[in-house]
Length: 88
Image (cartoon, helix red, strand yellow):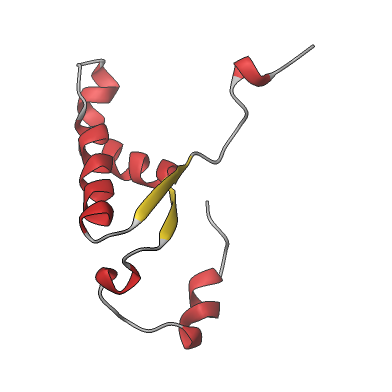
């Protein structure tokens, strides 16, 4: 997942700063990454078929952090095309 070696490559061009520094900007977020991390926290419930929305709550927490700091998030779901998109 992701681009191998990207973060070390960008290290010299990076600096630590508060997220508010980017207030007013639009940011694209790899939402599958957030869903995966959120699902990890409720994996047992998901694995046993028990109803849970914890992974959605996890994503919404971070979306709200971005919005509260003045960023406009665009959620990107990068992956396989959905079956409805296939045309014969």
